[in-house]
Length: 334
Image (cartoon, rainbow, N blue to C red; front, side, top):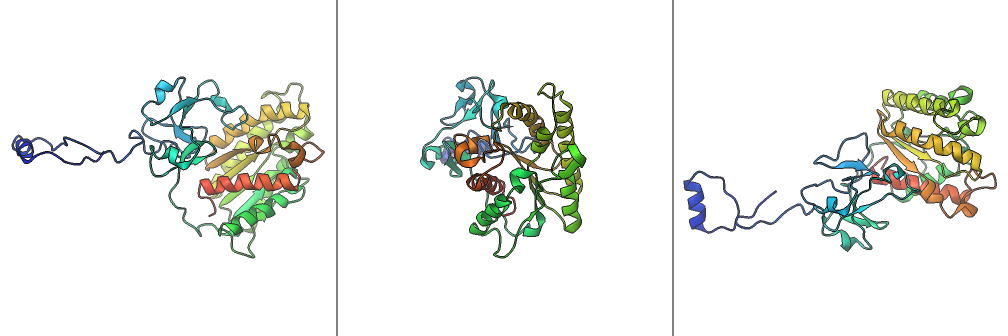
């Protein structure tokens, strides 16, 4: 930490004469986050980029906690439990240090880089470098949630064009499919979507879902990790992510489904979700997990079709906005 020397000359000569290091009589910190420059910076669990005693919890660099006393080294921080509907619900019993806010000014005590985002302070990333990924190097993969109308891909392109990340007239490639679209059942359709896309052009960014077709088509005596359909889908996801890493893919955004309306399908989805999330977080290619449940919560009548599974046009727009926010947060295809 830098220090501003404000000592008198007599004191300074005394220090020099005794061959001691020069230290300050008064100091001004240049890092108001308690020495942890990555506090509340977005992260991926597999990247190990937090450093300095921080851990990547619920998508940000922070400190696990069970009481707010563990957060005292960070200004205005308290120990917060995860939202049950969030992608970090696995930390429910542990908690993590957060700084609540209403406006950006509430985060100023952390640093000038911190902003208020949906009630919590987050450190802004450095400016993204644009032009590193062409539109043709972005590939969408998945099942009917993406492919029923392909509106989600169109909506995503519109957001990218509005942000200046996608030139007019250029398009992402969308290989999502209505039939060949399972992770494991029926011939590994999503893996085939990827290999077909790779055969056409190099792929740097994959935006995908997967697993919904497996649990819709397959049956389980018990909806848990021991169900062969669920286990096979999770294993296939791991294999596919490894194949993507070997093929030179730089980022994967894995958008996982909102809850199905049918209780039986939801039980299978609940069993599959943590397995796919674990595959994503342990992936050899940076994999950014996006749980769509918070986006769709309290909007099912507007966002979900009568089939109880797939999005309406408005739901596709909402899912595309959540995906685009993830792309922006991690400087992907900007």
